Length: 518
Image (cartoon, rainbow, N blue to C red; front, side, top):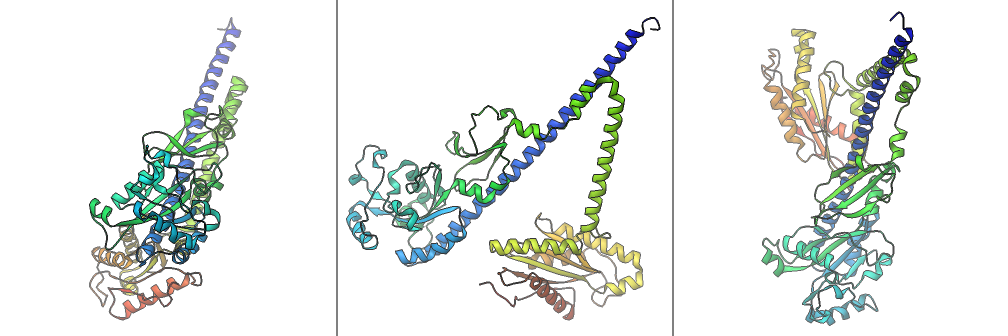
């Protein structure tokens, strides 16, 4: 070796280059995994937001259908009043339409009646798709009788929904099952653009609820249907969150094929990385099976790559030690900074003693969920809980025992309240609070908390209620209206808690809201 220093230099250089290449490749592969994980997480989040928007709009259609079902009859004025204000709040729903079942023998009578509401009314359709049967021989029609908004959808009035095979298949399935059924993606009669939409049919029957297919056929009177534009559903839920370097497609696989009903771009373009394609299946959408597919572009991946692998391989063995040193130090500093950041965030939102959400976290979460409940017109509930005779317990057994009692109570409450959307917080001292969004029976939750605390068996000989630690709870549930402040929920739950304590403790009292929804 001493005779051939060049060989030593070459050997060390090769070793350095090998280590550099190995390190560079490792960093490259790890970076790939991070990019893929972030991409999939983003797509999953977008799919969840889109799915929530679809479900919300289907619930709106279902609510309108229930309202229509109790009407003795349907006419243009009733239909307009039933649907006009709903459409103002649901931009993803292009229209609501009412389409009765009209036997062929009643066709002329129906047309005459419609002409009294809509002068110039005429039946239309695509009857060439109904095998070879002429329109006059079709046993029944399902023409659009009323539609709202009429100004933008006048062309659809009189269109026989049963004349086109996709619509007809959905109509028959909805009628026979009694469920909301969506068509495959179609071109809307009233829409002159290439945007795809779908119709969701919900059947109405005469009399009480029909329970068998035969009964449904015999008592079926028509359909209330919503016109949904897929692009608008996307715009309302995820449009602003879509990275333009990601191809997002909504694909219908109901019939076993790949029917792309929405796409942010052309999937045939070469810059999409098909090997990184990812899809998220959605829950059935009115009988349809949809998936959200996504592919990143080369630009998406490139924008998220760092320079460290290139620097390592570029500078080689001469700077390998320096690069490793700076890389390790940088990673250590980043880890310390991230740890410090996480610790600060935890401290700012967490009660140090119990590990529950603190008062600041409680206030922020209540404001967020109150706004959501008001926007979606959903129930929000609050439970205020207080440990009975805790001051006596703390004075007699000492503060360490009191702190341990608070921790055990906190853990017990977390075991009862387990939904991701619920929040358990330490409100102050020995008082705790539960925020329960979209909960129908908050009283049962509070009672479960009371029982589980009692079953902890923490001895309290100085309680005038029971020889064990117990709690009193106040419950309030309401649907927020625009004029209600969030403090109303706290106030009424606190008043119910006060009543529980004044009337014997170790009990749950429910408040009666002093303000009602519109």
